[in-house]
View (cartoon, rainbow, N blue to C red):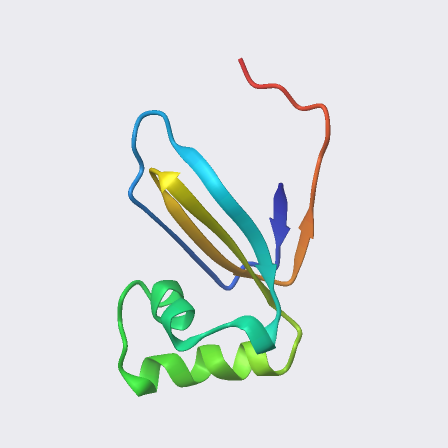
Length: 90
């Protein structure tokens, strides 16, 4: 995946043998307060969340969220996402 126009990116919980449970692209209606806090690296004060709320409400950005059954959680606020097929890293 290639993310363009990234405003925020948060990953935590890396572990050997990460297993992805779910991957979703969320639009403004689906972005909860909890997701905004994750994007803000755990900071929940309104003065820091208000700018993020404004970005997602204008619908110019989406959130990519990868939820693990084991390992890292990823949340990214971005403008565009592209999937590149056939790339194998050794």
